[in-house]
Amino acid sequence: MNMSAAIQLDPMLPAPYVVRQVTKETPDTFTLTLESSQGNDGSRFEPGQFSMLWVFGVGELPISISGDPAEHGRLTYTVRSVGQATHALVSREVGCGIGVRGPFGRGWPIEQARGRDVIVVAGGIGLAPLRPVIYHVLRNRKQYGRLVILYGARSPGELLYRRELAAWARQPDTQVLTSVDYGGLRWHGHVGVVTTLFKYARLQPSRSVAMICGPEIMMRFVTRELENNGLQRQDIYLSMERNMKCGIGFCGHCQYGPHFICKDGPVFPFNVIRPLMDKYEL
Amino acid sequence: METLERIIVQHPFFAGLDSSHLALLTGCASNRRFRAGEYILKEGFEANEFYVIRSGRVALEIFEPHRPPIVVETLSDGDILGWSWLLPPYIWRFHAHAVIETRAIALDGKCLREKCEQNHDLGYELLKRFARIVAQRLEATRLQLADVYAVK
Image 1 (tube, rainbow over the protein chains, first blue to last red):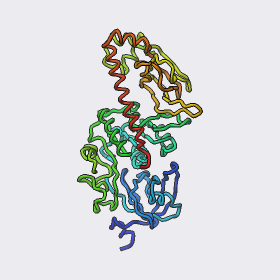
Image 2 (image 1 turned 30 degrees about the vertical axis):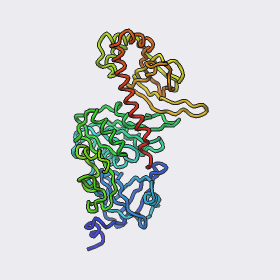
Image 3 (image 1 turned 90 degrees about the vertical axis):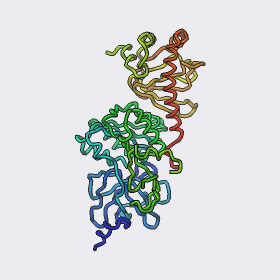
Image 4 (image 1 turned 60 degrees about the horizontal axis):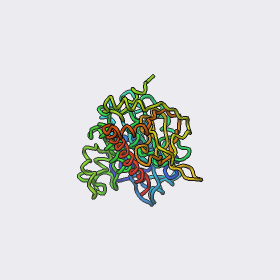
């Protein structure tokens, strides 16, 4: 058995990848594009899935894939530097090696959303796991209804993918609304939390599927707003985050009630996890 | 061209008001247009109007001498601007300026205050509607204060 086949058989064994591109998105957030150093195409993934990225000598991190699922041969990750391991990850230069396990988990319901409007609600770095959905919907435009993207960030300088947001807004049947909590003198857009954008979005709740990713407190308020707007809980999906280690439901680090975030999620229907969201200990 | 009456009748804020109340409100309404950068209201000045924003964007800001204003919230199409006209001492608490060209309907708050004193049904209906807006903005402000996107 060659090394490549062994890697595919053992999900605990990282495959060697090489950093091909590093893009600075905000002062502390970077997008890394990786290619397999063995030439095999291990880049197929479903929007919403994540990989375990191994920074040799530092540690391993669960990071959502933020690239285009139709673009094969590369894996793209957007990482915010918030600690030692993420700082080491975003500090990798072009040509550096990184170990990759995965992709893991259940992604966004792109099949169930076919023929319906797609409402994407993101906060901060939460836009990264949702970007593959946006790519997918725009690439398969006729298979979906309207695409509504509501995106909130702390400040204008912390908005991800600003050029792409502007480009998406120009696409047919696509509404992009962004808001920041703290604007500055040069910011002429919305100021206020992301939930204040709903009143400007022309939602059709009975024919919509909503996908949310952001801080959990934000998601709680967003789900409330979506329900106020008439969406059913089974049509609302959230990407949850917990301390994931093995990525395949063995270790139990990411257990969330009866679920493992890494295996049963990270994307869950709201009606499934709603009862768990009130439990302090979870 | 849409008449003031039609705009008011169709606006969700006024939904459910009976025709006599709507006629009364229309009588206190006028069309306004603000250029980009123009101030609509200023902190410390008498608050005698409120606005239904038809189109555009308005920044609500805190004024601080020698420093750039702090924009705490923006309002846009369909939003209601201003509730200080309803509560003593009827003084604006914030500045508000048009970020882009903005069209609005101004409602004469001074006139409405008098009518509300005479007609408590109208007063109660208006208070209920403003209370809902105040509650929504308070909730949004609390979430904003939580600074949820910050690294914890």
